[in-house]
Image 1 (cartoon, rainbow, N blue to C red):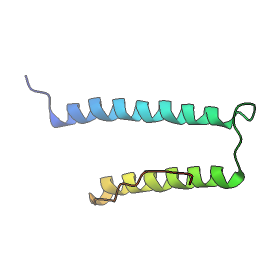
Image 2 (image 1 turned 90 degrees about the vertical axis):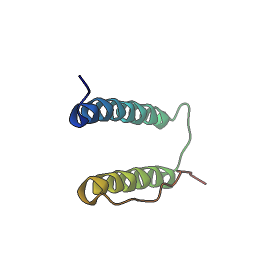
Image 3 (image 1 turned 180 degrees about the horizontal axis):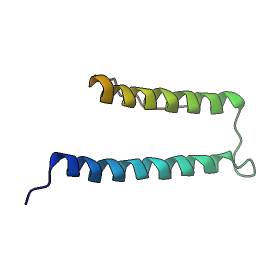
Length: 75
């Protein structure tokens, strides 16, 4: 029996969400000041970008729009 579209969504969305959660947890490791140095501006830029991307992602579920994909950089 073929996998339904909903079952496929659940399988893929769960896997991708868990990957994102893992990456956010890895990003948290960068807060260790014994290993890294950063400014408040760096942190604001990171979280502003993450919040913007999350908002864009959420809007795709609401209006199915295509948002431009940009790569993040601190420079």
